[in-house]
Every structure is written in C-alpha cells, then in structure tokens.
Amino acid sequence: MLEDFMMRATLAGIGVAFAAAPLGCLVVWRRMAYFGEATAHAAVLGVALSLALSISVFAGAMVVALLMAFTVNILSGRGYAMDTLLGVLAHSSLAFGLVAVSLLSGIRIDLMAYLFGDILAVSRTDLAVIWGGGALVIALIGWRWSPLLTATLNSDLAYASGIDPKREQLVLTLSLAIVVAVAIKVVGVLLIAALLVIPAAAARPLSRTPESMAFVAGAIGGLSAVLGLWAAYFLDTPAGPSIVCIAALIFAGTSILSALQTNI
Amino acid sequence: MSLVEVEDLSVAYGAQTVLLRVSMRIEPGEIVTIVGPNGSGKTSLLRAIIGAVTPAKGRIIRAAGLRFGYVPQRLHIDPTLPITVARFLQLPGGVAPADIAKALLEAGVPNLSSRQMSQLSGGQFQRVLLARALIGKPDLLLLDEATQGLDQPGSAAFYRQIEAVRLSTGCAVLMISHELHVVMSASDRVICINGHVCCEGTPAIVANAPEYRALFGTGTGGAFALYQHDHDHDHDHTHEHNEAVE
Picture 1 (tube, one colour):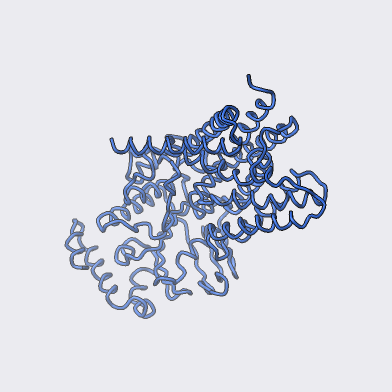
Picture 2 (cartoon, rainbow over the protein chains, first blue to last red):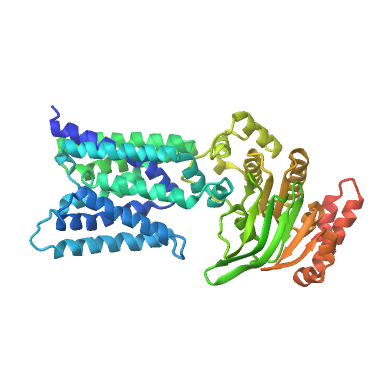
C-alpha cells in the first residue's frame, strides 16, 4: 500500500528524529531552544547564496549554519542573555535570507519548499546525506556526552574537572549546524526547531536520567515521523507539519500523564 | 612544594578590575579561608585557580597532576534535566559505584543515590555537591560559600564534616565564607581580600589586624572572641552561643 517515496520519506524522518533527539535534550537543558531556530533561519540565507553561486544547497546551508553557530559561540557571554542573542540572530537572519532571495534576479526559488520542507521528494542521495550526517552527529555527541553534560550542569564544575565548557559548546553548535543542514529538505526551516525541542520536552516526564531522556526523545521523534507521514498520506495534509503535530500531541499526552501521576 | 601558587594575579571583567596583584599560596593539607566583603573578588580568585577565568596579569602555578574538588556557590539544575544523585556523582565519568557510596557516606548523606537531584533539600543538595567534590580524591578542596542556604546547626555540621574529611584524606581546603566566627575557628590561615590582599595570617592575627577591623568592624571581632570562648569548652554549647550572636 505504501509507495516507494513513502518509504524514503519515513526513513528520512526517522533519521532526522534520531539525530535531533540528543541535541534537542541538550538544547532544552541549556535553555537554548531558539538555537535551532536561529541556525535554521540562517540556512535560508545559505539556500539563497548557494543558488546564486550554483553550489549544492546542502553545502550552502551548512556553511551559513556553521557561521551562525560560531557567531553565537563568540557572542555568548558578552553581555547579552542567550535568549535575547538567539532572538536577534534568528529573526534577522531569516529577514536577510528572504531579502537575499528576492534580490536574486532570474532565479526562481520555491521558497515554500525550504520553509516547510518537502519530505515526500526525498531522493536516495538525500537519504544518504541525512543518515550520514545523522550518524556523524550521533557519534560526535556520544563521544563528548559526559563532558557536555557536565558543562551543561555547571561550567565551573566542568573547569574544575579539567573540561573546557567553551569547547564542548562548540561541539554542540557544530552538531546543530550539521543537523539543520541535513534536515532542511525534510521538515524545512520553520519546523526543524520543533523537531529538536518537542520530542525532548515530551520525553522529560518519562525519564529519570539524561540518557534515558535522549533515548525516549529519539523514540518519540521516530514515532512522530511514522505516524505523521501516515496521517499525511491518508488525510492528504502537508507532511512536515503533520509530523510536528503528532509530536505535539505526544507532548500533550505525556504532560497530562505526568500531571495525573503527581496528583494521585 | 605548594599545591597552588598565585603570583601577582589580576583579574578583570571588561574594564572592571576585580582583583589586583594578588599573591598567595596553598600548602598541602592546610585549611585556608578567604574572607572579604561582597564584590571583593573572592569567587573570582577561586574561579581563576580552577582555570574558569583567564588572568589579566600574573600567573597561577598548579602542582603537576593536581586534582580539584570544587563546590560552587550556586548550582541550579534546570528542572527539564532529569538526573539521579548517582549519575550526577559519576560525571564526567570513570567513577565506580563503590566510590559513589563511599563519597556519599563521607559527605554524611548515604542512601541518596537513587533520588532525583531536583527532589533534594537544600542541605542534602550541598552535601551531594561535597560528595561530588570528594569523589575524585582531590588534593585541594575549593568551597565557595558552601553552606549557603543551610541553617546554623546545618552549617556547623557541614564544617565539622570538612574537618573530618581533611583528617581522613589529608586534602587541603580553600574556602570562602561569610560566617566569620565558624570560619575563624576551622581555619589554619585566613586571607582577607578586598580587590587586593588586605591581610593574611592565622585567625588570631587577622582578626586583630586593623585592615580586617576596618572592613568588618568590631562586631565580628566580638564573634571571634565568642569563638575563642567556645574553643575553651569541649562540650556542646553551640545553641547558647548562637543565641548570643543573634
């Protein structure tokens, strides 16, 4: 019953969800929920530039997302609170991206495709990029997990243990840039942040350790991708938003469940 | 060989200099207390020693292979981060379960290992932080207002625990505290700073130094006198003295 393209879409969704899960947890714990937003919005600028220079969209998005990651890294801890900084960068980079797109005369970009993604158009090459990038990110985060977690708890505790929190943050921002670049085609710019944050938030009431929260977030993300695509197929709704809707419903479910548990 | 030697250290945040030409050293096994008014750079000195702030001038020489145990002034764990006491103590890794149980026992809070960090009381939380600081078998224990949020019996018990740990492990202790009378009783050496080192020496010398009196007045001198009185008695009179302080 399921077509080939549905199979590829499902695999792509699951790949992005798995890679986003541990990152999403770290982002939530560090109160950097807007970071995904900022990086993703910057990627629009990357898309515009890569089309102007006729290089691959993935490479362009990657480069600009990395630039954004480094900018945040450098500017953080220089007088602005993280949420203010990310708010400024997220919205201004999207605006610059949209302006840049409009200035590109002669090139027609289907902006909607990049804003909302087109998971049903995922090719085999895209799939390879997503799973390759996802595996790279999971390996990177797995390798640095304990130092990252220590630095997330308290930067001075990290220093006292011989860990450089700035280096760990760089690992995190680098991984986020990679995930955004590989995910832009699947869920699009506007929904990447949702896929980072919502499964992690939904996993919180079900978890007692940081590691279990990351695994549960991965499972919830994967489930959202499968159910969301299934819903999109049968209800003829847009695929990316459907995935995010399912994740949001799961979040509502686990929140209500935990509220009931604490009241009993 | 000193554990840590601070030479002519200046620390600045932007244009604001918080520490100017501070020199000090910590020898193995001694308890050193830093006192000073708010904003005098006490925490910056501790953070410079663990490497969390880069000196503007001067240098810090740490003994080769020196292991720190650090109890920060405040530790806020975001409620979205689920973590058990045992997992918290494991970080950043390489800690055996037996060592976790031992460190919790040493810190005076056995049986907490499966609890969530967010469910601990203030006193339990501080003691878990102490357990984490002890777990790496530190040569130097750094405590930044470690008894913040504890009541007086709680903080007195905390300092007794520190003494006991020093006796059993032989580690040096560098601590910051506002509770002058408690600190004065427990320390081998006191360093009074206010952006620079005002005075330094045994508790008795510092308490009588004019620089110290200028900063803290004679009221705390009175507290110190109270401590000396306390010291003459071996039996437990703390609650009476506490009332006397208030």
